[in-house]
Length: 126
Picture 1 (cartoon, rainbow, N blue to C red):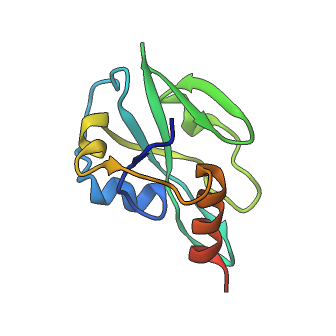
Picture 2: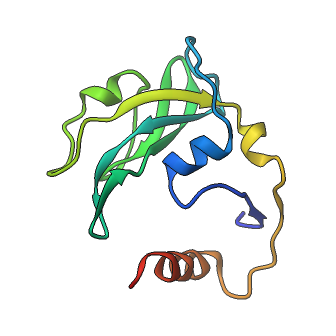
Picture 3: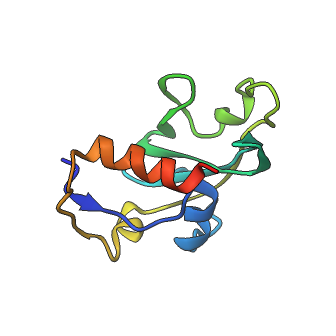
């Protein structure tokens, strides 16, 4: 676990653009990445940061808001947004294989969690 580096954007909205996510009218299959618009302020900047979940089948997605939770992919728009944020808006889904294109094994110089924290600090601080 943690030995694959997936290339995507700095946030879910950018990843959706990079993966060239197409409009889909059917429910996401198991393993699909399910993308949403998520507009709000983060790090002093208000914009679409995006939100992403993982399709479980039967229309359900697992995703993280305040906690990790399972919801029907269409019902995320009904969740009460955090203060200063707009309700989520379903965009579309992409097969996980699309996100894994170009992935490679990664030898972390530190544990993966510490590496991720450092990447976020480098990207979003000052």
